Image (tube, rainbow, N blue to C red; front, side, top):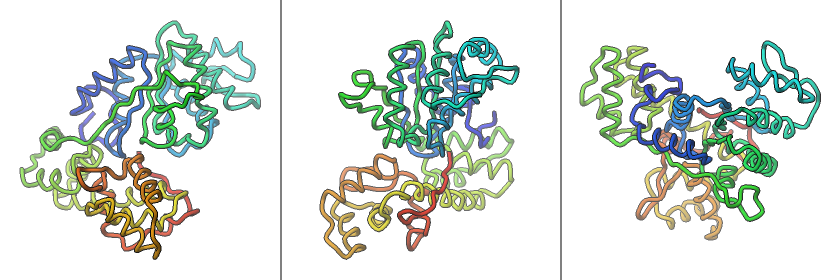
Amino acid sequence: MPLFDLAPKDSPAALFGRGREVEELTRLVEARRWVVVLGPRMVGKTSLVKAVRRRLRRPGAYVNLWGVRSVQGLVEGLISSINESVSLRTRLVRAAKRVDGFSAGPSGLSVTAPRRPMKTAWDLLDLLGAENRDCLVVLDEVQELSSNAGALLKLLGNVFNSRPNIAFIFTGSLAGLSRTLLNPTTASPLFGRAPVSMALGPFDRPTSAQFLARGASEAGIELSENDIAAAVDGPLDGTPGWLTLFGNHVVVQRLPPKQALLETIQEGKKAAEAELAQLLVTRDASLYWPALKAMATGASWGTIREYMGRASGETVNDGKVQRVIGALEANYIARKGEDRYDLVDPMVRAYVLEAGRPPRTLARGGARVGGTG
């Protein structure tokens, strides 16, 4: 797969600059540890887990939960993924014929009778766990199921206790269900058996420069040092997804590097707008937007509080400021340096700096906007 292909990479050979992470994630799964891969948008979480899944070649399922809000959506994703593997589908079809409510035919598994989604999910995972070998289930963007956290934790606890040959990899931000998985309470079915966390960050500058040079070389194109510097020292900032999009504009659309960079930034700002819309659809934009504005240029805790108070016309208490900052950090929107907070994604930073006010979709109760993978 070409380096600048926009689809997630699905093999270790196609994955650039993540050799150490591939080895570590493989080691953890082989040790039967469950893992939560954390990181900001466009950093390459999906590519990493797909590459490791391909390397291990275990039966199982990959479910992209982006936009999924229900256990029924999880069930549909599990069935779809299982049916994609001819060998696994064939084996499970035979076993599923003994389970009420399932239809099993040449096209694979399907649910034929009304039944509780959680029961269906358990039956699917139980069938998978009956495989006489280790299995792997990947739940990508698991925080999307946060509203069903209680039920999902019970399901996972049952799997942990009954089917130790099934390992899970979860991806997401450090918020909602991801946080619940990593920090289970004493009442949680996963207390004492929490997954391991693994953080994925942007490339450093040398790796970013090598990535762009190699991807261009694959297509017989040479990027100058100035072209590479303009990208990696500027708004792309080592984020693999944005570097890939820039490279794709250059080698596939044959845009001049300067134009390719401008196009990438424009698309990135649109994605940032959608990401903030999703984050703030259930939050008070009148508090979050001024905090984001402050962080866009780097701000101390006191400056953030000042921005929030100025926008509301009221004194903002410390607890409210901390909740806003904590939510932005947990979702990998903001990060804390030595003495100030700033925004993680350079495209979010560019969007916030340019926008005079939050778009209408950011208002509390506004329409939900989908994000990028």
